[in-house]
Length: 222
Ligand code: CA
Image 1 (cartoon, rainbow, N blue to C red):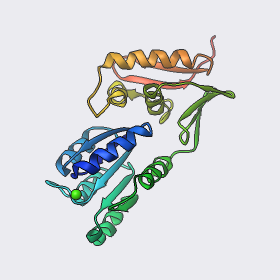
Image 2: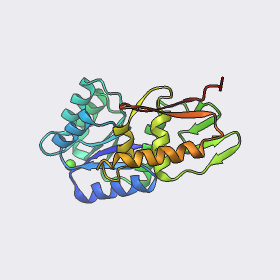
Image 3: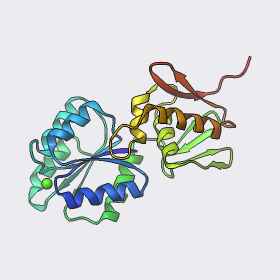
């Protein structure tokens, strides 16, 4: 999943970036509220980790602007002990969870998992393919499909909305290490690999020229 981390403390920012990477997510980090606001207005994210005390635009304003755009992405607020009142306001503004600093990174990891699970049925099925949001594993029948980290990222983006087009740009962001869009050619390479690995799953990853890709149940051959 693609996660935005807005935190101005460089040590904590780095720690969060690392722990999210270790559990298989792509973290995009920013150190101020302006930058967070800009990215949230222009790029897709599956979760936002938002410090309240941010320079240039505070976290509450970032959150308020995000919800005004009616984006339902889950938000985990990070706050210092003396910001209890802001924390409550954050929840009023539509934050989904909060953590008070200092916190344990293991607990952070557990909260992230819980937030990402929310809003998803545990398993999505397309054709014979079962995708588990919890274990991030693909199975066809009873066989687990071995996927690389990049393949997991792409498949996850596609199965989020089966039958709907996912832009090449979105998929390319999934392959970016730190928010830097990778070359679009890479998307083609990984889509090609996914198609091969899912050959027995009766699913089709269709190329919609100029728009992106779409995963759907394979149509029967006439
Ligand atoms: Ca701060």
